[in-house]
Length: 120
Image (tube, rainbow, N blue to C red):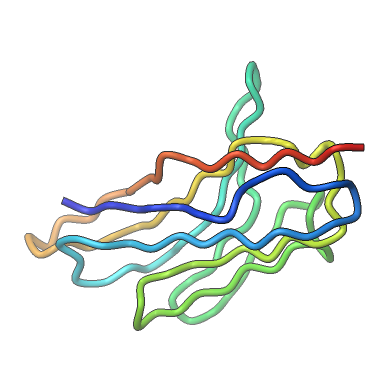
């Protein structure tokens, strides 16, 4: 079993900042890619940012230059620093990780999500 637990969501005014964290635990041998997705009710879940174990990052065009993804490989933790937040960033943010577990199975693990609300 692998668990991802997000934290750091909340309510912030436009222009403000939040930092999301996601810690992975359980039967983990290694984690390759980690990422953050977001979903607005009635819309598809979309990739916000991702990072490989080597530190290669990828961002959605809508957040590039405002959000920064980072990770601590030793702690199996990924972060998302969100600056200059806009009302359109309001969504539930989900953590995702591509995990190799102790059975040497590869699986995509998801957190339960954390709500980010940006007021105008």
